[in-house]
Amino acid sequence: MRRHRILILGGTTEARQLAAALSQRPDCDLLLSLAGRTAEPMAQPVPVRSGGFGGSDGLAAFLNEEKFDLLIDATHPFAARISHNAVIAARTTGIAFFAMRRPVWQQQPGDRWTRVSTIAEAVPALGAAPRCVFLAIGRQEAFHFNNAPQHRYVIRSVDPVSPPLDVPDATYILATGPFEEDAERELLERNKVDVIVAKNSGGAATYGKIAAARQLGIEVIMVERQQPAEISTANTVEDALGLVDHLFSPEMKRGV
Image (cartoon, rainbow, N blue to C red; front, side, top):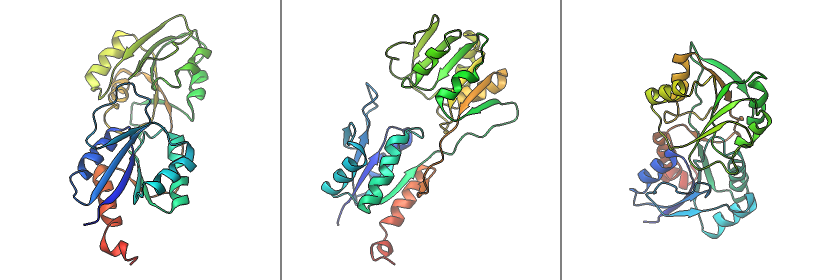
C-alpha cells in the first residue's frame, strides 16, 4: 500500500486532533509543522518540524523535495502570512490543498461588540478616557497599546510579552486555554475590567471570556478576521477527515 504524504501546518488544537486521527490510518505518512513561536509547545501525536520555510517559494520547494501529496493549513485563523504562503505554494506545485477554519463567533443578544479590522484599529476604539482593558490577543501585537498609556491593562498570553508594554499600569497573566466561562467571569470582576480586546478566533476554547462579558455587560472590541482566499475549507476535524477520504479516493486518483 502506498502511503500518502501529508504536511499539516499546525499550531491549533484542531491541527493536533486532525494529526492524531490521521496517524491511525495505515495509508498516511504525516508531518506536522509548527511556526516555533511558542516556547513550550504541547506534545504532538506525529513527527514535528519547527520554524518557517522561507516564504511561499521555500514552502513550495519543501513540498516538492519531500514529495508530499497533500497540504493542510490548520494554523490559527489570524496567521495570515503563512496561510497566504500556503495558498501560493499549493498553486505553484499543484498539490492537493485545503484549510481548516473554525466558524467565527456570532454576536448574540446582550453582546456589546465594537468591530474593528486590525489590532491597530482597536487602540483608538478604546477611547480617550482611562479604562481597565483586558487584552486577550496574544503577545505579538500587544505593543500597539503603547499608544494608549492612559489605560490600565491586564494582558494574558501563553508566553511573556517581550519587551513589556511601555505603559504605567500593566498586569501580565501567563496561561494556556481552554478558559471556562465561570473562571473568566471571576477574572473580569476581580480586575474590574471595563473592556476586552479580542480576536474573533472562533471555537470553544477561548469563548468563555465572550460569554462572561455578555453576562457582565462588558464591551468587547472584536478584531474580525480577514476574508480568506477562495479555497476548499473544512470547519471541523470530521469535515477535514472527509476531505482527505475524498482526495485519496480511487475515483480522484483516476481523475474521475
